[in-house]
Image (cartoon, rainbow over all chains, first blue to last red; front, side):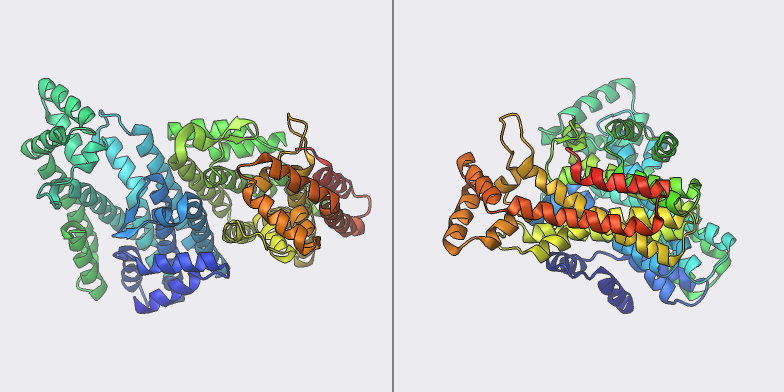
Length: 310
Length: 310
């Protein structure tokens, strides 16, 4: 990962001073680096990590950083990973341009090296991510979305890039089409588990007040625990819940009611079960690799995905 | 161009309804389509227009559309080509995502067909465009930028993609490296002339009040006519001008003073001269192609670039 950080930093450099200061800031507030790790482990599982693997990992982390920077504009977020977001510090216009710059620089890194399989795998993910976010916006504030739509949204907006990580890693060391397809499946399972976990945080994680934040409910963002709770509720409960969700933006008491119902009706448990099924499928996909050290590490990574607390 | 529009529309399609409605809107408010035209003429000059040319033209128009959509966020513009901008209609978040979607879709169009030279030429331009915009922001509100910085900004933010048009067109019909380099030079000259013309509009074009708009002066955007006027002014005039520019945001009278000075000191004339030198260099680069119909059309296009009124 230390070597990766070198490649990553170098790939971001620019002769425009403003841009250099911003990318330096972005590197400092780096996150879990789950995606580059997945690229490296998927590569190791099929061969020897080389410069193609490093470029693939850097490209994907640049894409991921670009989408976070653009998400900050999209969500009007002023914090990200405990830091002020770029658009809080430098305004929307700069956040948009820095995101575009990162996308283009990442692309040049792999295009310049003629690594077109990486490029195709990642471009497909970028298209899916923006389409997934737009699908989510289209469905936003509709309280009647079902599980199938939810799965499609999270597959596109989150699992697609994690799928690309596993595929790019394998492809970077010359793995065959069959292995790449296998790794895509692994990435899909990990990505779905990852996003369901992210959405569970809203119901599970306790904030300073000692209660779950319920921010998704406040924003009428329909995620798996709530979708399940609603689909299982009788029609009277459903009407009552819908009313609470609609007034949750101004009334924390209504949010608490929804939170309680989601727990009591088993919505949280159901989402955890679905998440764990994805984790189990990911583990099963690693069985053919036996006790290969990279397979072991990927199993641990799958555990981390569902057990992490951030 | 009719065939192009088919390819372009098809490339934009999405199964997400919201996205389909937005891209339909984008196609309707299409602009001058200078860039696809340049791709086609550059192709025709070196061979027979084929599917690779069409994909290259669509890709570039998608990139151009994406940057306009992102520019709308960047500039907080609520109008574009006489239509409401996307972010006025659908908010910033959607504009950012639609831009990202267009970038990714364009890329997939050419990556899927294995057209990597197109991809490399265009990615380089995308990096330069975002870097150029950021350079402009970095220098914004500095009244002391010189011609060299101005040329660097417009080369990156405008000429780079027009350069890519000419190169992609030639490359799409199998032109050799030497021809591609020649066409890049042509694109550079056309692109520089194009942006200087755009910047001249602010001084030349009369709005409803019968006067030039002076909006760049109001926003303290330093373009060639004003940069030249300032560099030629004596120190007393310069101080007076700087004061006028700084108070122009609230006082239309001060803007008028600056406008008058820029005209009287020859700043407008100078910018027109520089623009025409670029046009002349573009024409000269077409000499070796004699009276080839595409060369004739490109000469007319060079004339249009400097003579257009929109």
